Length: 116
Length: 115
Image (cartoon, rainbow over all chains, first blue to last red; front, side, top):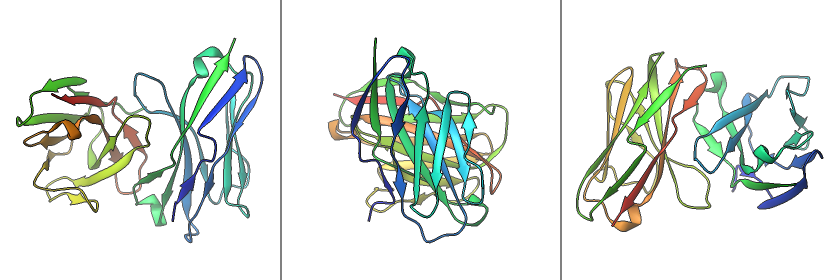
């Protein structure tokens, strides 16, 4: 079974508008971490935001926020005020296990295109 | 944040040759490094977990004799693709972890093209 599901292979958004990228996960662990990474065409993996399973507040980092709904096992990324430079692949990832000792599992990704 | 480098960033080789890719943690010691492979338009797939001073742990379906991993020091892990074939052409990304429960930091990736 897929551990991380990203149901949107591609998304379009108008510049300056907000966009939500979906991510659902599957785990039986109580301790886990959820991450979002951006991968531009250059290939580097750029860390955007992190949410711990015990964090009660949704994580925010500048224009990025994570809509964490634990009961639904979803961790959607919200990008506010989209910019042309936000066009890239976005990967949701999870790390399971106590002390987060396990490796990452990545979702299939969503390609975001920001339109001028 | 911590910096991880990879060398080379891009390599083209002939079929049948071997290629070595280096992954270095520049400003921290990494007890564990991970090697991922990413085919075009696909996600990252973990190939192996490399612990300093011990043998790498390979994921199911990854040939350990073809993808040789050496983690000789706390700042360097190498991936050698032996007898490369065109189907090995891919983007290879390493990551390094700070300590047992630390954050992972990704390298910039190496694009391998086998002719």
